[in-house]
Picture 1: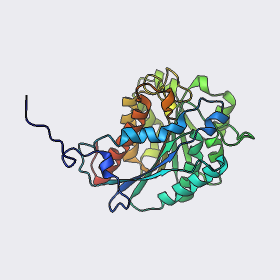
Picture 2: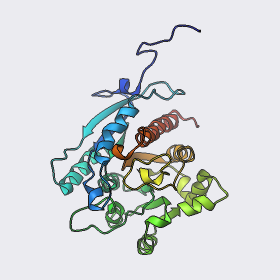
Picture 3: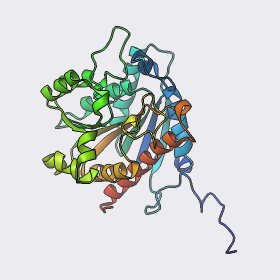
Picture 4: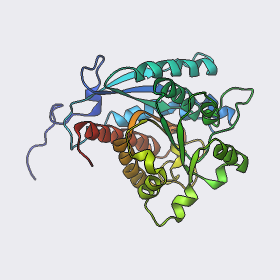
Length: 311
């Protein structure tokens, strides 16, 4: 039957074992948004307020990347205060992310929660990195709705961000035809947003990585400050049914992770946000596991880049 299994923490570490209150080495920071009010304002299904803690549950069970030594750590900043008003929660999130982005040797990761939080994340990013910044959003929706009287919804983050005074290059990838109006697409094109639809991906004879890299062209030739926003509804419901609005069509995790690792290695990704994970709508935790897996790949690709090697 083979030898005795190793069971000590030293021989079988998990990411939770790398949590530190005062990290001394290169580290990743986590901040949660247990809030789905913006989804409800957008007439979506509730449940994403449970996303951050469920993602953590699966993430902290994972082992560190096999190909790398554990010369990094994690710091969990907990969740934002949800007793504040929605507008004030957004202000608090922006303030916290802005402070995290200013810490050397630290890469923040935010967990949603509604995609409305891509605005405070993006605003903090643009405020911190004003030299040719890049924003990439993986999503089924353009999320450029004007802000309604009830407050910022999960459909408004990039309407708000594109109306900021700081110019940035913006890609929307995975946009689905049945989820967006012609008027919203036209508004994006007028704002010079680069849109890669799911139809383009579906009918291309190229892999997702090749298609996106070809479309990005010179934007991939040199590292530049980058914020990657991932609305989990960009993925097919076969892999991510646990979100407010899931569709059978969408991205495949394996193809996405290959592209994602390329982007992290070629660009200078300063901030990663994963949104709309809704455990009550999920099956067997698959959507939360996918979000945790994306974070694991982000950690791996970032460390490989720091080490000066390639995948």
